[in-house]
Length: 229
Length: 386
Ligand SMILES: Nc1ncnc2c1ncn2[C@@H]1O[C@H](COP(=O)(O)OP(=O)(O)OP(=O)(O)O)[C@@H](O)[C@H]1O
Ligand SMILES: [Mg+2]
Image (cartoon, rainbow over all chains, first blue to last red; front, side):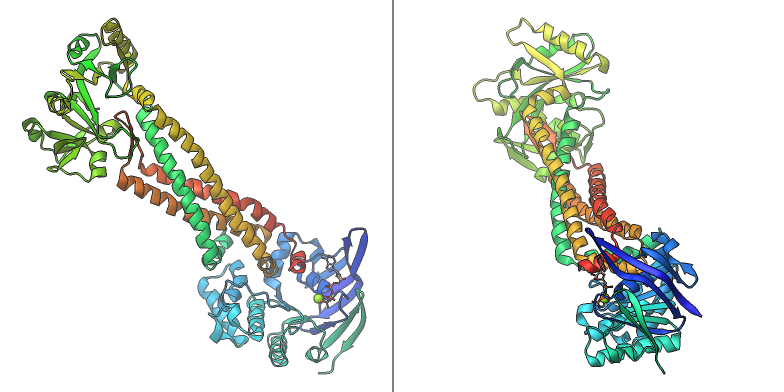
């Protein structure tokens, strides 16, 4: 069963008179529970696609359906609420809030949910446990290594138990060892918790954790590869 | 609304965990609000000393064209003539003596009045605290000291103090609603005349304090008094006490009027400080705001958080400054004195309320435009900008 369906999905930016088409009439289906790696040269539209999937950008034309919901029809506010329920986003540069501790960063998305502070505490602790960073909960981002920061960021992305986990080059800034740890974590979240993962990567080794490889070029899907697991 | 409450600790952490930015901003706001409050205290004092109320029933009879207690000399026997004018309830001859001719916040003003006349000259609503009225009767050098003057000088009953070369014994502390009564020392007229006698003041006094029967006849009685002495050797000029203060302390009042501009400037400073702190914070937090939006925070929630941050900065800085100003006026009990008349620097707690409210409102106001801009940010643009 497909979770995500794109039909003739386009995103066009106007820079002065010039028209830029990072995504051009893209057709794509992603199955629920899948682990997808998006690959392609720089400027091929990977981040643009990921932002559309996250509902933080809107398509210029075409259709984007996620879980039966047509994102193009939602208002800004509805999109924001949908994001807070359904999407976890992991950035290449972690993007933790610097004035908050690891614990507080993970707690942040839960402030939007009508749950008791006890329940919030339980969920944050559980998420920190999953990413293996519970002992660092009171550290500020500047006191953590890159790999640790990224694990906190992943905890923040999964603490709301989203169906869709999006990651834009999550290991792009990490050394090999930390990268492996992060990839095993994402893989585990996919296999054990059943979250659909869509990840952008440049790195073939990282891409091996996925079960589908999508190759983009100039805003189009040029190749789809099923990986044997 | 619930979301705003749940995110409040986050807003507070953002403020507290930028200690340098916060300290500088709060310090600036506190100083500006201190200034604002102090100016308000002065304005409040001017209003209290010069604004007529419907119950005012006191006239001051002064020598025509004189404004200084040293040059206003009127014969004591005028009181007999004034007493007979229709509408006059009572007359008290008053000798004024000040210890300091310069502008100062700590002038001692003596008012010499006849022994039995204290109750006639005091504005209604007075109370003599810790009073030993017997010693006011018994001792020639006894003084009933206004509470503000006593607080300023640290005086209590039984103390002696010297000002203007005159030493008096404090036999009572006077509590009163009237700013003049709170700030002077009442002594006996003969004692003051005696002490001042350096070149024959004789039986002259500075002024007469006249109480009328009916407050609405204040002007009529004043005219009647002036007409009585119009062709006399010592013509008089009679006004209500508040109008008299407004005239004699004109310089102070103008100065306070000018200080009001400082007050407005202080308010603008508060606005600018909060706006500046917030605008800089917004620039530092572009990425944070984009992250928050990615997590599902709506633009309006982030905007509300920005306004709350402005409000908290205004409130905290304002509270510090306003409270400090209030403490200073409360403890100091300052009074600006000119020609023996007092314009208090008020320490009315109401000024606290006004100051804190104003600071809070300015904080909110300063946050509105940045909040509006932040709430409209496009997330995908933000990540490109950083
Ligand atoms: N908001 C925007 N305004 C203008 N142009 C944009 C905008 N967003 C993306 N682009 C352009 O769209 C194209 C695709 O960008 P995108 O970020 O999706 O590429 P990418 O595949 O993620 O590349 P990289 O591997 O370098 O991250 C680029 O040419 C980029 O300059
Ligand atoms: Mg990219």
